[in-house]
Image 1 (cartoon, rainbow over the protein chains, first blue to last red):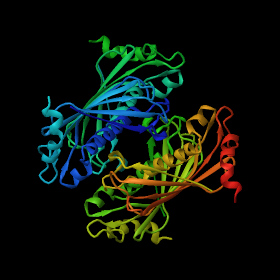
Image 2 (image 1 turned 135 degrees about the horizontal axis):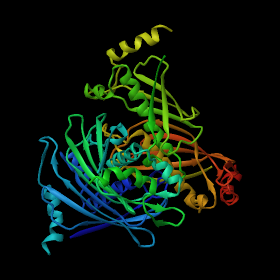
Image 3 (image 1 turned 60 degrees about the vertical axis):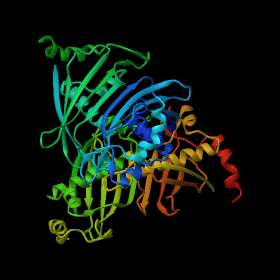
Length: 137
Length: 137
Length: 137
Length: 137
């Protein structure tokens, strides 16, 4: 398993008139979580796309346990629990400043060869970097 | 069961650099779907909130089957399959202009009494309007 | 001059915790305004892009006169006051359901040849369709 | 004059199918800029709202000089050039990672007493903190 933590500060633009973060905006927080997990492995999603592989989302699940509010610094803990294949699944836990779990979620994405328009395996260098975290198990 | 169909046209703002609708924006399409389902029953979410009841989202699920693209007119078919209690669940099917199913999803929301800050039953007049669609079953 | 009117209904996603439409979202309403103005001339922005011309925005101005609120149907009146060249300027007036002017704005965009990465003249067929509205002046 | 610099990293959600940051999203970058300027003065916009004063935007201007792209770290330099009264104007300069000026803008906001629904002067403690930067001139 590989885990990485990052933070996002809630922007005014992300709130709605309930005074909460609009539920659709958690998808963006998840995006920040998995992109920073990639970066922490010395891997860049941008570079991946530039190299001809994109990662559209296949599935999204979210549970909203407590609201998050304007200006709060939210901790996004992203988990890679299984070794990726053509698909990769991320799990998320979001915590507010009082360390309360406010949201859990998951996304499944697929590696797609842009030119061929077809699913492909996760890039070898990415898999190599992940090896230490999964071989141990 | 009660079903209602409405359409949304994909805005440039909603696309991402993959040329697809960003996955977080489907939550907004679902919102349009359920609000228009409400309106079709002579019921307004805005009036509900003005009367002291709000409806935060508890759960969101999405499956992305095919991408949707800029300027497409997406049909959002919203289903109310079960009689609401303190919670209400909506199911969604989204179709593109070629009548292809591109996305399925569901959201579960809870009725909350704003003043008391506590869950409450669905408003009686809303339940009354729904009765014909569920009593028959 | 050429003018076109369309409407947008304010989504919950577009409100902020002030209970108003977030100021950045008017840019999207302007987008809807100018795209529908294009469509009313038998012209499609999507087709334009597919033909190799894109239109990035160079300038944006907005005055926020009155707030707009959730679920309001906003009328977006878009004006093309001057004949386009390599640039095209749109002016906007937004009205709420009480016919009150709530927002005025303008955007200047540039026609760009995508392959060459350079500004280009407005497409001839677009200019032809506009001719009746400007030759009369 | 008082100036403050902060950074935002471009999210995938903020790009559009041109591969650029959608023009409406700069308003959010400006929001981050002025909120962090506030915070750098020991002042919190959130606390201001909690104390009964909100700050709707009256005017927005933007010039888009160069596109910004996915994953770039954008520097937002925010300027407070004039002493606030009932209104406050912020100027912005945005730079990409190559230190190129990509966007300039300004926003004018008004202090509003939420209870009375009327414009009010900038809060005294905020004005005090600003004094050193304006008295010198």
